[in-house]
Length: 621
Image (cartoon, rainbow, N blue to C red):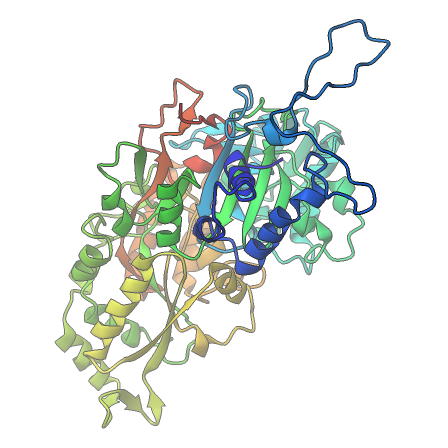
């Protein structure tokens, strides 16, 4: 099944309605490579051979008179059918630029984070849009932290808080097989198996021990924890469920063909893919949560937000992510909704704590004093960003309560003061060399600063930080990598810290609705079995994380996380730079089918992961 607009481009080329040059320009704007474009052109040029409805080439020995398009052609009639014959239109005569009303059409989306080619939702480097639209979890959460049932229709907790019983929904896998408890157990066993390239293992550990699980029957799963554990339900909700019947005999889960041909239970199923170019998902009509409104979703991989913006303007796509620098362009556009939200954790300058120089707190402290965070924020966010003085964004639902506003303020402890930065570096023995770069015992103060490709915001921050640190004698070399490449470095325990000394990104990255940072900040979670890929280690931080996650009631955990906020200020695992006000741009062609969830409301960061179940593409009149 093809996206109507994609097909429209193809259809108009052979009939001279679209020139080859315009065809190349229009396909380039949605991110197709030159080889792919060439293949499409060749397909169009060979259309008279491949398409059964096309006019055949006349045979040299037996010329055949073919009727003109305007001539009437009598359709064959079935002699056994007394009904009047019906002229069925050829495929080329059908205007598929407007999908049937009952299907809701395709929604096209531009993605700038690259194609990892990993569609298994439990593996590192997984494709987020496949993870959320093709698979399900036991539970999900709404924007305010409320529980939404998914593959589990209900659950119970024992009086001692140790046994969790989950009652499962009836659901089908995309290949027609029934989902049951064995799939859940198989998923858990795969996540904790040695050799599985996943960061989800910590989600199934409580108090340093692996939880136990069993299935009393095919619609029930029991999980026993060694002690009461507050964030366990949310931790469990992060793990997508994979099919036992497909993967049980896999020789290597990390390289299985499933990665490029997945089978899930979600609202949309894997359809077609052109690596590094586009991915198409089609509606799963037997989805247990109800038939999705849209017929499908097509993700086009583009190089950056400018290419994505061009796709939106030209009509090839309906939806895209917009960093702050792009949003003003669309604020007054009557055809595009700018759906803004604040990222729930600050954008940070993250330090690799295996780096021999950055292990020194005084070095990190000097770097903090050398950076004018107010100026940086105003510049890279075009005035839209918010100050970041705590571990969570002040606008983050639920998480805001865990910021200690009375005792934690980075601007007060690490104010912009280049002279103080120089004094600190002088005191610990780093002196300026002839070229202005500081050295100590032949050790040059030179760092790599990485970020990922896709939009200008982080890259602009890189350049500003490079300039500011140069003022105090610190050399910074910049590098911009594809997101999937950087993901691979994060999960590699042998990654060289000299090549990844600092990063501009969102680390540590906690749960959106739970303050737990065990996976990314606890010293027991270094790669490959955890997401503490900056290798931070502090006994007091570990203690506070363990203490906070052992308390059942969310509000009772606040004192532990306030102390954690203070300890992070004192140890500087990373420097908060600002809170990003990001946005999703959605063309008015996309309409909501849920009157209680209008698109004009400000969404959460992850609204899109569920939204297109209720949204449809509505072609313009």
